Length: 67
Image 1 (cartoon, helix red, strand yellow):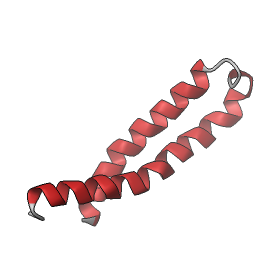
Image 2: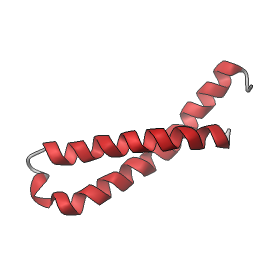
Image 3: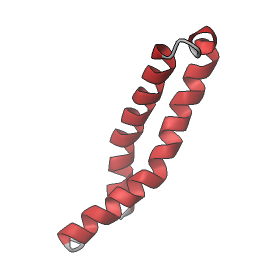
């Protein structure tokens, strides 16, 4: 399961980091501090993707019967 979760994490982490960066750049209240917030939000996106990737991997393995 770890291999599947790792592959999902790469894709999901990049996606969530991109969503977080877009959030920083589009919300006017966050724009003045964007240079400080961009790396923080990107890291948070990657960290949030870790448990999410394990959940998705478990669901994939349940659907495929563990093959």
